[in-house]
Length: 91
Ligand code: FES
Image (tube, rainbow, N blue to C red):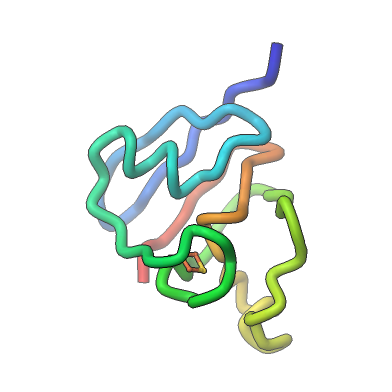
């Protein structure tokens, strides 16, 4: 069975359970969080958020993120899944 991690969204003040391997975005929206997204496939950047704590893995490399964004903790939630509990700031 896949591990399940807690993902806390600081602006919404909500914590969502997300299974390893599952999209953070899909899990959060499925739990009723009002997050912006369009493509859900790592192409548009609408789902950008800032990872404050924890580690994610991507189902494929996020080609649209600049190096300075990556260095600043910006992630694409639609193609990210948790490897640990996470703290995320919605942008
Ligand atoms: S929704 Fe388009 S990159 Fe995530």
